Length: 417
Image (cartoon, rainbow, N blue to C red):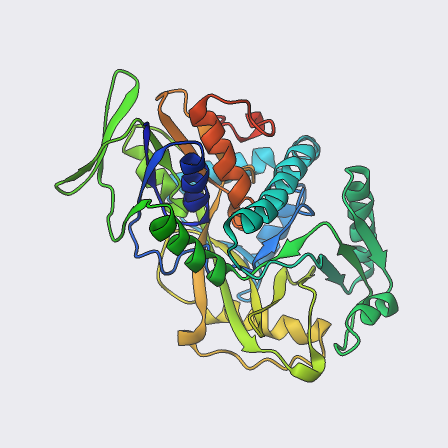
């Protein structure tokens, strides 16, 4: 039996372990944390075939520059002379073109639809409950500019075969009659779903470890990677060595540092996001997740509460909570939902995590050219949870030498070499 060592126990690493085990591999997961909290836990829980436009898109550079002067803005690149940030930024600028967006739409659609279908298959096969619901997602907007843009985007989605419906404010209100809205319109992406990430991660860790017998090494940071003859031979944490036939780097925002141990350069920056939860009002109950388009804020009902999340701070990994960004999230919500009078949460109640952001907004998935037994699965930015199952299946297919379920060329690991 072949053995795989997966570095990273977030949703990408867990699904890679699941699909490798399913195809006959012995699997061990090594994670620097205790698997109780990572970027997979605190996100908006959205599964989004509707997100077929990569982060690197026309207008993002100019908008990002404007937002840099607003302490509550949803997107911020911290100015720095860090060479990695500068190189990443130059690649981002180069990628932010209409040609790149057009080229990326079908691949992002295909991998997202695959992932949504695999979530349902996983739910059925394992019997695990992670509160997955197929109610779609509402894109809510307030300005004439966004009415035009979102109408156009909905048309593009329809042309891609996605189920998108433009709604007037009154049509949108009928979907959730107890929730007051102040919007100019909405698009209902019926193709989308949502789940409760905390629940998914907890039941999945338990299932993989206890039911499937996958070994999980917690609080174990990899500090050395040995290689010989174009193959990885072992990974080490202090005096502990892990040996397998294949290795997977799925360490999210920490992936560049881990990849560097092999001599590989994986362009990627951490993008810090924040979220917090508030109890759901039973009389004004929200049932369909929403994205507040101008504010770039996600609002998701989950576990009897509502999770509010947003912002993208691109910079070094740090433990500081920028409460101005949190205030920006809280203050934007009543502009769309007048009944939602959110108190600014205490700092201790604010969750934050680091999304792995590639320069072109596309994930890295697949085998490396440098080492024939090393795969990389990272760079998913805001859609890591959404693409978890598909990424895990594609990694298993790559290591098994099987045909890929979707074309993975757009996600080539060394595309920036």
